[in-house]
Amino acid sequence: MIRRIGPTFCLLVLLISACAPVISQTTMNTVDKNISFAALQQNPDAFKGRVVVLGGQIIATTVKADETWIEVLEKPLDYQQKPSDTDKSSGRFLVRFQGFLDPAIYASGRKLTVAGQVDGKVIRPLKEINYTYPLLSAREHYLWKLSDTYSSPRFGIGIGGGIGSHGGGGGMGVGVGF
Image 1 (cartoon, rainbow, N blue to C red):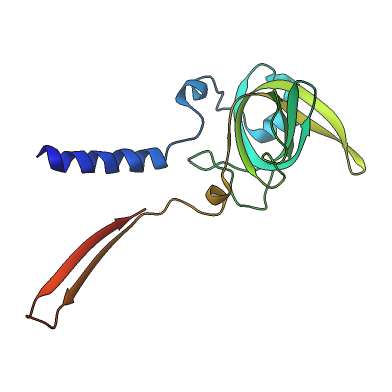
Image 2 (image 1 turned 180 degrees about the vertical axis):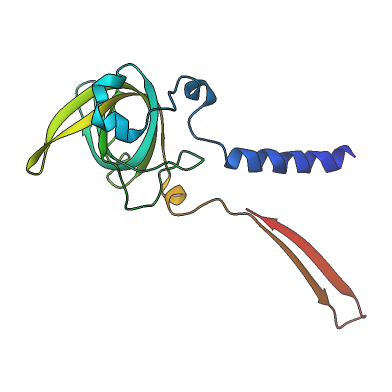
């Protein structure tokens, strides 16, 4: 009986963890889930001190003396807090990280999910306009692997059978893949 429970339990834990959000529950307990990105972008100063979870595609990474700033094109998040592969966005935001993050790793095009405290706004030129960026100080983040970006969770079950020509034997198999 115990031999059957072990593999089943491991499979269940693996399936549950594959669907878990990437930001820890401890941090999520501090997040104000009622703040939409549209509201934040419209008036970042109104949400100073609140914690939000945002994600999107990295546009640029700038290394400064004791910190790294990342400009992100906002994308809607799915149930795992993964930025979607859509051409839709509500705008851009900036994230300030303490310390050095290598721009070769945190490169343009990579996907990022971040939980951060709203610090207000920064106004910067964007082409021929002055653009208002909501500014977050990162508390926790997840840089999506390139393989995560181009694939989604997969689960499959297969059943096969066969008949042998020698001795009239047959066979059957069952497989599970992730």
